[in-house]
Image (cartoon, rainbow, N blue to C red; front, side):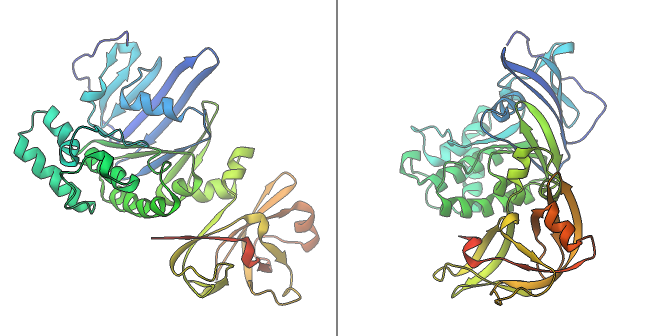
Length: 366
């Protein structure tokens, strides 16, 4: 890479990941990224294809040296071109889960998981026992001797997650971990990821182009476009105050959990009618803000999904306005500035909202 690894360099100790990255992949594209992830927190890099997410993965993982800036993890300098420091990937103690698993096809499942430990000269029996424990935690008992080619996509991704966690890494890096899976498996693995992210004490960096993954799994979201962070904040920050057209598109979904039966979904104190009569059990509903109608009084025709609420927040976005409603079901609602002005809607205004059953997306929620 043009720089040799140097002895461990310490800086003033800050816990978690601190990254100030400037790196070019071509004359036409450079990534400029700054982020801090404290221990026990999950940050998501969310952006379209070509935004620079893979470059960020390569830089943090040690596969690509940066040109300017620094990368430190728990006070240890991993990359600092000004000081001539570059720690190779195999010395960074970062657990990585790639979207395509990248399991060794000729190795058994248990040897895939134990590989990193063996590379660090952990005794074979000890490495295999620790690998077996992680496979059990991830519901893969009895699959230790299988080869990756004998696994489903979801099983292979669980093996990849076990391999990343078995070495007790300082940072967990997840690169599009669910993108290659079908909808049902993705829903199941999202819950598995959520559980293990919550249990992992170090910083976690999730790379994704899927806003649902970012909104459900991350504590903070960094929106990346054309190599630059254009916005960062919580899921509600992105939904309510998108700063670019791309971020506004990302914000175009309310995510609501509930329990479905016979075309009805219970979401706390509110019951919603959905178009799918067959789905039952836990579900995740998606409702686009622009599909929610706003009225000053009970709408005529008594639509099945209509209820009174109060406006808690109003955010103006040029000719559009986003509202945040209060109980019984907090939603982000989008309407035109002309409609808002005509109805004199401000924070605290009582309104009615309505949404058609056909405008509510439904998917299993594990």
